[in-house]
Amino acid sequence: MYSLAGLQRKGCPTFALVQPWIEALRRRYLVQDATPLPENPKALGAAYVGIDPTADSLHIGHLAPLQLLYHLAQAGIQPIAVVGGATARIGDPSGKRSERPLLPLELVQAHAKALTAQIQNLLPFELTIVDNLSWLGAFSFLDFLREVGKHITVSYLLAKETIQSRLESGISFTEFAYPLLQAYDFYYLFQHYGCRLQVGGADQWGNITTGIELIRKLTGQEAYGLTCPLLTRADGTKFGKSERGENIWLSPARTSPYQFYQFWFRQADADLPKLLGVFSWKPFEEIEALLQAHSTAPEKRLAQRSLAYEMTARIHGESVAQSVERVSEVIFGGGTLEELAQVPESLFAQIVAEMPTYCIAQVQLSVVEALVASGAFRSKSEVRQLIQQGGLSINRQRVEAAETPLNAYVPLRGAYWLVQRGKRERFWLRLAEAGA
RNA sequence: GGGGAGUUGCCGGAGCGGUCAAUCGGGCCUGACUGUAAAUCAGGUGGCACUGCCUUCGGAGGUUCGAAUCCUCCACUCCCCA
Image (cartoon, rainbow, N blue to C red; front, side, top):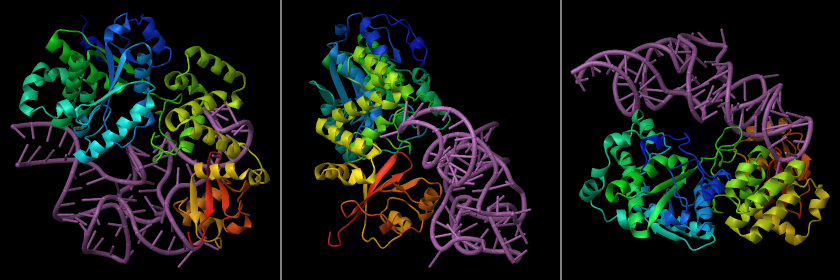
């Protein structure tokens, strides 16, 4: 038996991780904290990760814990994903500065459906997916207080870092009670699926240990917890958001495959060991070889390319990944306008389909007017400023003056202008047919 | 219930009657150098018909030639006492 108190603080290494199966995860940067774990992973029975359906898609922040599940499944542990149809209606205070608005039931259910499908497609093996609404939904408030609440003291919850940090800014009883719901999930899975391990992001440590505590109180048996680090980049900022601060979603409706691919492709060299370790399904040795090859010629961006391809293929499929990769090569390859114009029709169609495209209705416009009218930019000042700074190119040619008429640039295939904003952002401006 | 402090641009945070579209820092954007990397340096960061004009400093009124700055009311946040 171990002391829970000693395990609650994040970031303090609690003991030596000697088991080889854990060591394999650790060198992939997938381990932040763990309770003492059994030597044989099979003793864990099953492992689960919980995801609350607070949006209609997963984003890449959800991937790391699922990767834990992936590797555990490889080690022979049955993987379970809990879609938190019940808990999403309450709101997890972990890592949140302020109270969250309550989500309507129908919305949560729609989200849960979408996430279930995504999770299923994400892991290459049979996976049990359950919704905690199926057991928490039936619980009456009184029964919950009697059967669950009785076993966890307020002071125990108050000691949690996630609760602590919210005491000043305010936390409702609803969110305060959240850890109990998640604890009960763990208990339920322990009883019904023989699940003894819960995994999650580092921010879930408090909730996980609460579950372990509940299981111990109710059954006298031991359960385990394992968290992966919340990813940060080498410069200390949060990983997983675009430069603009938007999430990178798995749903193509929210983040296009092209943008998804580009996101991975742009990662900094210094972050690659971590990113490949965490996200790639390649064997560790293969990753090391790749990093080695990368370091001899970093300008080739071998590692970024490999990572971007693998992730895009996993999420959006092999053929989309190929297409997006080819498109990126053509668009960023630095080819001249002539080369771009001579691209085969089928590839050109692909390029246009994959990249963001903005439409205008007529050509009798200045560059500035056209870009604003198409919706690509929010204001004319923004475009003018960009031009002034030399950051705007159309059809591979730098725009020198804001008043330049758009038709000073000959459109590709009669209707397309390739717009480059800075060195990374590229999109199409398209002349829409009058009737269309 | 009583007393006090506050609400400014993406964030932090100055400004306390005119010279304020608002110091500064962070973030973000762009350029140079490069490799769609990092670091560094430089510039930019409300809108427009751009040497000018228009709309911004919690909301609504008011005082004044003139307000982010003063007054009144309202809303919200925080702190202290009970």
